[in-house]
Image (cartoon, rainbow, N blue to C red; front, side, top):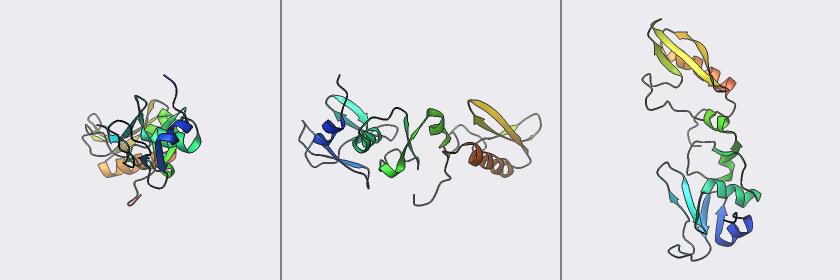
Length: 168
């Protein structure tokens, strides 16, 4: 398998950095010239098939713009996996990419990130992961106090994290 180059990519697709959308420049099998390229996969990323290989569109946007595939992860800053505007993409380590999560896990009983009920002390417990280890923040009387403490720690310790902004 030969690695896809920026030159080959630009022969086949046009990328609009303002919208993050790729347009087909050629007719390739069922792929129509002028049509929007790619399909959304089951976890929300746009995937595009080129020369019998499938690529995620955010990685193609990086190649198209900067001339090389990223060695690191690509982080969608607004957490919208199909928003491939170049302004929304940044290089990240795996750990930095995980910092950007801003919603609690679906199994989280408290409904707040980093907050759980501590049965022994009968208080809400806040903790955060840092460098692969859990860091205790504190125990609190209310879930809201624990959440506020967690969010303050997240702002300080996870520099890639951004609070959700309306209209991003």
